[in-house]
Image 1 (cartoon, rainbow over the protein chains, first blue to last red):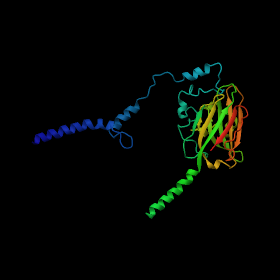
Image 2 (cartoon, one colour):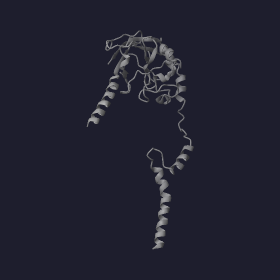
Image 3 (cartoon, chains in turn red, blue):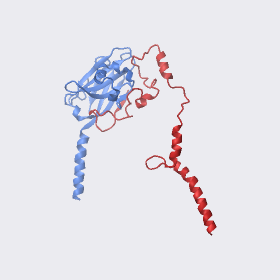
Image 4 (cartoon, helix red, strand yellow):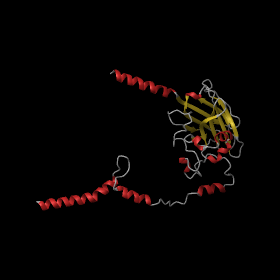
Length: 121
Length: 156
């Protein structure tokens, strides 16, 4: 009987030792972070740099400069998304954040009601 | 029961003024068929002394062109933080831009003026294309622009 109990205890301990880290890695805690043991895995993941396979970055701006009609000192037409490389979606590269991405400036002109809306017909 | 009613009255009293302090205002600008590419427009407000009070909208997402919106640029030094969250696409010739903003009631009948600067590629810059006092009486009345804007209205 004692031998059975020892065996049972050992297998339970082994299962817990293997299973808990795996379970922990899959279960976010209440504050959105991973569990204590999963943190080990998370650290490893952060150490790996994100490598972009696409060589698209910078291409659009080059194309834009090659255009004989347009210079960078001139105002363009409605192709706002062409040479931003997606940066303007968050207001990057010195461009402001588009409406809907962030709240309007706290300049005292706006209330706290509905966010700004615009349409062009 | 009595404390509950008192609490209800208090929260209502606190909520109602905040609702009344701002309301949706629609700004509508129709552009002329000026025969060029999309126009950049800066909509901003000055106070009764003519001092820049803040921006309401920027039509055109690339800050490198903001220098052509000369009055706005001079007032803000081209600070894009002034138009974060209130920026949209430039507006093509002959098209209508309609913006709905939740604006403070304090802007109306208090000496504020709404200005629009405009610029289009390879065409002349047009600072102060529109300048219209923000008043209750002026709501719904059509104002003509100088070069690019055929007409502009605001309504509450």
